[in-house]
Amino acid sequence: MGQRSLARRSGIRWYLLAAPVDRAELEAMLEHFRSATHQLVRDGQPVTCSVGAAPVTPSEPPDALYQAADRLLYEAKTQGRDRYVIGS
Image (cartoon, rainbow, N blue to C red; front, side):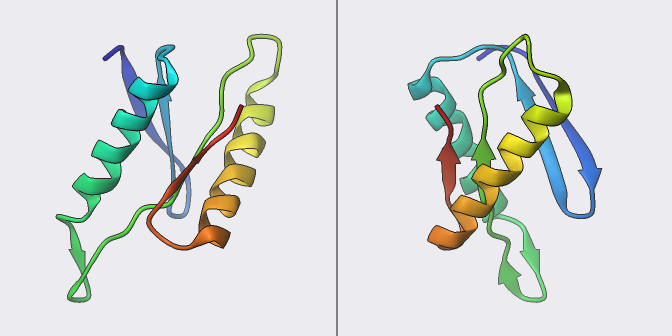
């Protein structure tokens, strides 16, 4: 897989920036990340992970990317915990 950077933006929100990947590679990356969080425990419960994955459009400002990712994150949370939603 290509280069990746993980950054905390605020509160419990984290952003993963990844080099361009195809959808199958992105799904594998997100599933690995989601599964890895299950090894973490907080208050005696395994940690879950909801993710909104937004594609980067070079002409869009960074805030538009964050907003798209947040919208997809809330869509994932609405569908239930511990899942990811990928934008188109």
